[in-house]
Length: 264
Image 1 (cartoon, rainbow, N blue to C red):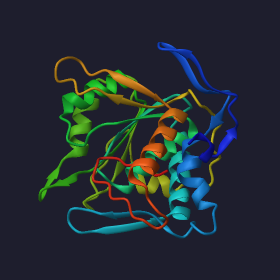
Image 2 (cartoon, helix red, strand yellow; image 1 turned 135 degrees about the vertical axis):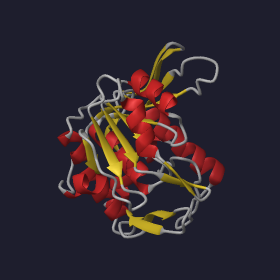
Image 3 (cartoon, one colour; image 1 turned 180 degrees about the vertical axis):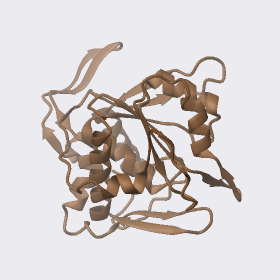
Image 4 (tube, rainbow, N blue to C red; image 1 turned 90 degrees about the vertical axis):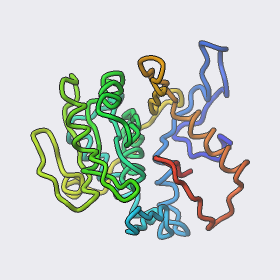
């Protein structure tokens, strides 16, 4: 499976060590965004094919080709860097199932930032606990989302959650509903932030065992705990699961109703 990925530097050993102290693909470097986005956008046969076909609850639809997706990811990566996000920093992604969620995730992968996805249905307190636990420096949210015909106030929940959270410097806000909310200090409009940036951003070289994202336990019985996933391991495991269990053929459409999907 690893041989199907595009490596910036090939690995020397598949695994070293044992439980509690192991490393996979030792010596190897790759970038998740390069594999999920760039290698397809650079392929003339796929560049103008749809990478994301999206439909929202009210019936609105959007399509992004691989080439357009790459441009969006690059602009987002540059916007995050303009906000001071550096390699190893954590970005909290508090979005419903929007194309912007995938763009933000791959932008983090591109620059070596660590992302953590916060369920859009979380209460302000649940958001706050995860912002504190992850030490996120930037959050991405939307003004609201749609849930069974009503609007869920994501931005209001984020504003309440971030009060008193040290280290969270800025919030990027996606205008999901078209209501154009009045932004406060340390908030920026997603579209304006991306449109001000160039559509070129080099992929960082990422060690196979570097952290890629944090996923938190439910916190139903105790304070939620963050679990770290490495870049190469999760990417290759996901590819293997999709290819060997789902078995997609070229031009198949994969339906994803979860909060965030992976494209490999």
